[in-house]
Length: 349
DNA sequence: AATTCGGGGAT
DNA sequence: ATCCCAGAATT
Image 1 (cartoon, chains in turn cyan, orange, blue):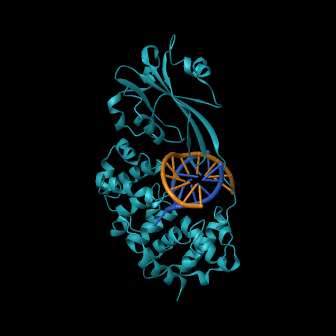
Image 2 (cartoon, rainbow, N blue to C red):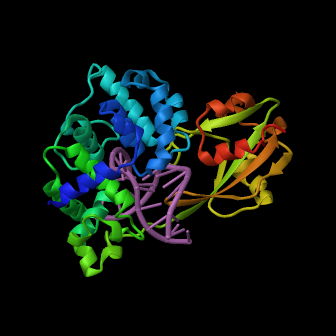
C-alpha cells in the first residue's frame, strides 16, 4: 500500500469533526483557510462560526464596513488577513460579478491568497489536483523522506513542493491535502511525535535514522524587539479619544488610545516631562491612575505597555483624535491587550 | 532573501 | 522562556 493511501485511510478513520469540513462551498472554505493561516484549529473555530453567521456569503462580506469585519476578527491576530479578505470579496462581487474563482491560478490573484491557500481551496472545493504545503506538510514530508533541506529558503520550499506533488492522490486531492495536514497536526507533531501509533512508521526514514526530532530543518531564528507603549486614556466627561492605526506596523486598521512610544523603559515623571507628552497638554496635568507595566508578547516583538488615566481639562490636541462616547468603545476594533484592559473596568469608575 | 504581520497553547 | 501554528505581503 502506498504511503499516501495509508495516510488518507487514517484520516477517514480518525479525522476531527470540524464545521468547515461539512461543506465544499468555496466561500466557506476560503474563510476557513484564511483564518487557519498561522493559526491553530482550536483558536479559529469560534471565529469561523461567528464570521459565517454574520457574513454568510461573499456578497454580504463585500457590502460590510471594514470596521465591522475587523471587529469580528478582533483577537484572532494578523489583521491584514481580514482587510485583504474584505478587499477580495469586493473584487469578486464587483469585478467578477460574484462568481468565485474556481481554479488555482485564478485563486492566486486574490489578495491574501498565496500558494498554500490557493491550493487548499482549489483541491477541496474544486477537486483540482494540486498539493497544499503548509507547516504540517513540511514536517511530515521532511521526516518521511529524511529530507533536511531548510523549509525557510526558496530552494527548500521547492523541494518539499516536489515531494508533495509526487505523493498527491489523483482521485481525492482535497482529502489527501487535509489528511497530510491532519496527520501532521495530530500524529507527526513537533515535540513528542506519536511514532508508536503512527500508521507509516515502518516507512519513515527519519525514524529509522533517528533524526525525527531534528526535522524539519530551519535556517534562521527570529529575534524579538522590545517596544514601550504608553496609552493615554483621556477622560472627558463621558467621552474619550481614539485613533486608527494607519502605518505598516502592528495592528493596522485597529483603534487605540492616544499613544506615546519610547525607545526605552521610562517612568511616569520622565514621560510627562517629555516633549511628546507636553505637546498634547497645556499646563499642569493630573494623572488619576497609572497601570502596572503589561508585557504583551507578539511573534517578533515584546510590548511593554502602560495605561495612564488622565482627566481631560488640559488636553490640547483634541482634533488629532476621534472623540467617542465611552459607551460606544466596544464597537471599535482594538488590539487584544487594549480590549483586555478595558474589560477590567478602568473606564467605568 | 529577509523582515514583518498576533495571539494562543504546548513544552 | 521557546517553539510554532492549515502563510502572505512587503521591503
